[in-house]
Image (cartoon, rainbow, N blue to C red; front, side, top):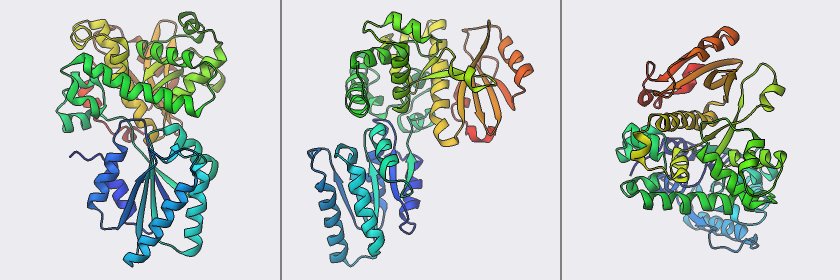
Length: 394
């Protein structure tokens, strides 16, 4: 079975002395539970793996009972250390307070129980960690699967990855578009919106949130003002509501609205957003445009390629720590600007969609980036760029 890079990171931390709760955080269907099970198969530690999936949310005592079981098994086994793994922990009400209580008790009493937490909702995990467990945890971030991973694990070529994206669960379904599309919509999108987003945030207009997500996926790679978005959505709302919903979708690692790059923060955050999916599978499934049609239509395929490059940049942003923008002045534009430690890199994507490239030249003259280059036609091949370690650019 394929092992993601985070396998070595978690395995290494499990071999260290007990210091922090380890939290696996990431969007749905990226292999968090699978990775933990792979580590458990290899690690030389007694362990207890439990899931809160079928536990009533109000049963907060379940966490304490589970922890007591781990302590008893540690004592019976007379082991020097013990590992407790709790999956779907966010489904328990006030889970973070319960975890804090048990962890602090073990710390005070020198009980050597190491803890790994994971769950399908990135938002619920994030809220619980920031509320109660400050200073007690480390996060291992798991992003959407990269081109390199999908190629090594499932034999994807670059065009398949650009279109079908990085969901391992759908990799074996791509020969049947309707089945693959249903999988993405019903097993990934619906739970992510209905269970994670709507159960975490106060969303007064759930239908507006769903419409915004659908519209954002279809318009991935395009600039679209919030006012124009409202004009295309059926449910009434306002610009502030829409902006908040877009932020929530970004926090869920589904869809974001890139801000325009500028010298001052006010101009950045008041700009027209450029919509971008975190996984091109979302663009493909929501648009309903079949692979053959997208691939053989240059203007369409250009947007898919740009979205694939954008998704790659977005998914590395968490790890590297850079911020991401786009740039436009009148008719001149640069698809992506990444900024880190007061240095910026300008990236233009070309795949036959545009023939001119004045944007890079104008951007260089105005901002003097550390690097500026083309990805695609006449530049770095897309297949090569999607294997880059972007941290080295800085």
